Length: 126
Image 1: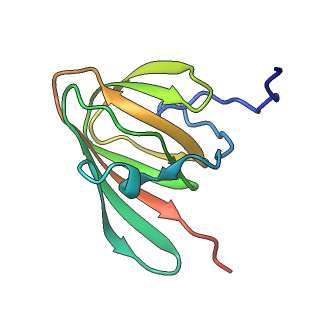
Image 2 (image 1 turned 120 degrees about the horizontal axis):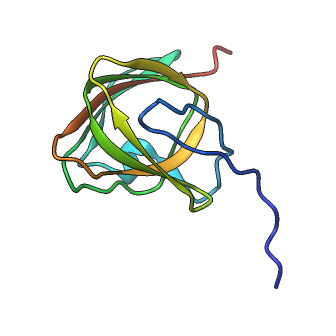
């Protein structure tokens, strides 16, 4: 059996590498897939704001984000796993803010500090 070709992209939750990847149907909404580490703090018709706290050793479930802005309150060392099975390690610095295209991924904290971020997901204005 041959597998269909997919468009693959590197994923960097650390936001050092902010690249796009199509959303597979199996990926869930971030707070639904990760209710203990990701919480909705605000939502309206234009944006949804998430708070994320990933303690040392924690591993997320695969999930998707639309285009978003990520601000890291506390940094650390993260391993990001793309939907295609590739992974990327990154060191996140506190205070960094980046824009990220839509992404499907899961992350694991491979460092010794809790990684805290605010994620502003952008909604279609129409």
